Amino acid sequence: MQNERKVALVVGANGVIGRNLIEHLTTLPDWEVIGLSRRGGAPESESESESERVRHVAVDLLDAEDTRAKLSGLSEVTHVFYAAYQDRPSWAELVPPNLAMLVNVVDAIEPAAPELRHVSLMQGYKVYGAHLGPFKTPAREDDAGHMPPEFNVDQQQFLERRQLGKQWTWSAIRPSVVAGFALGNPMNLAMVIAVYASVSKQLGLPLRFPGKPGAYHSLLEMTDAGLLAKATVWAATDPRCANQAYNINNGDLFRWSELWPKIAAFFDMEVAPPLPMSLSVVMADKEPLWEAMIAEHGLAPHSYSSVSSWAFGDFVFSWDYDMFADGSKARRAGFHEFVDTERMFCDIFTDLRARKVIP
Image 1 (spheres, rainbow, N blue to C red):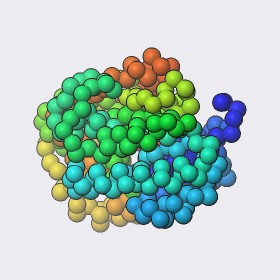
Image 2 (image 1 turned 90 degrees about the horizontal axis):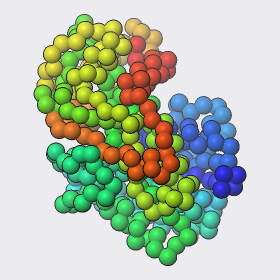
Image 3 (image 1 turned 135 degrees about the vertical axis):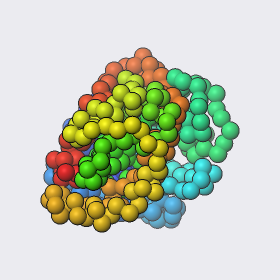
Image 4 (image 1 turned 120 degrees about the vertical axis):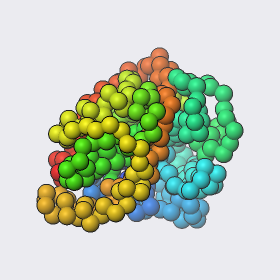
């Protein structure tokens, strides 16, 4: 399998998960990569070597006809890595578009790609009800389900039914909050913290934790996007992982009360006591300041909207309960990578500085 030709179809190629997955796949000698996204084309961060090995296709996954037309010629695809996501205002409204996109991809690629071996589905801890309130921790892959609506569950059930009697297999990958580089992504916590800290420093303010009081002391974990990419490819290519779900996390736990002062130290800032505030509200008027910071510090001209994920920051910083899962199933099956979360944040912040995204 290691030397056989493998062709990855990465669905959601420009998101933080898809972007880092493509970056990993292009370091592997036996993979070819096709990236699907609404915009099409390579993201600004794509390297020259990646550009030579990645074919980008623009497609509207909510349009079944467009999806079929764009994917019907991709007969060489062997592995589908599904990481697309469309945001909606409520949990119930998330279900139809996110299920439809996956169905449209499978409907289009299955008859077109006779050598299809695997469909990888990116999920998350919403499967365990983590978004609803305090849930059983550590969460395990075989935990009982919860009351719908939840599109992650619907997507997996669709794959389970569709796979019956087929040669291809599926896997469901369940990361915690994913951290990595990607612009214009609605779920990018590292960018939230980096821009919030940079704006606070520009205003001469200390770094205050903006979440709920209880959230400062809850036990949490993260998933590095690079580690997630390795785990995703591992699960898609190891026969032991066929038709299985896996929690994928860094392997360590933290509390914001311990990590926040270290983040402040990275930005050479003082820490002040937490102050609950909605980032969506208090950061809404900061676009003129951001434009001034671009000019003053010689930053890359990224729009304020492309570096803002304030609603997601509010969501994560509202977790005044423990948020972690048991990652030992993946380790028992052979995936032993881990990442130090403090180092991960510092590496991402350093990368953002090198790219001139933040001062």
